[in-house]
Length: 205
Image 1 (cartoon, rainbow, N blue to C red):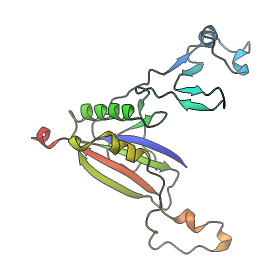
Image 2: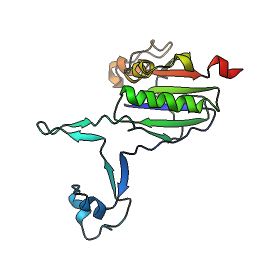
Image 3: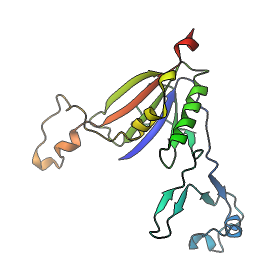
């Protein structure tokens, strides 16, 4: 399974693009001193195609280990419109996925700004953290409601760190047999977490 954090609303969701990612041509990459895969150096490759390579400075490589680490840029956030799938259980009409290297308080503060701006045209917005690929048994939804004035970076941090926990046992499912090739753990419900942020009471009047 893979994690997905997304917004949902009954009003269209504005898209953001991280300034730390951009598409470039092979020649642009070579001119900038960026290493390219050998396959992109073949004669058959159009080296002036501006959509050939995705460049990012979102990660830096540690010299001692070679491991990539988050560069920590607070504006390294992308929010992109997405289609609903069987994993997306919101009843809202519009969805947009959040893409970032990871949580920082600076990024969380930018998300709060995004949410505040969205609530000028909507009554509420949902922020979900789910695990994709757990269609059966149906996931348990753990939903909480807060007002905009109660939204702080620690709320987003807590949601970010939620793990795929075990929900309540599924009532009424047939007891599996050893020869069915399914484990009891596979029939335990995952949890989808959702925070519903509602417009401030003063703004609703």
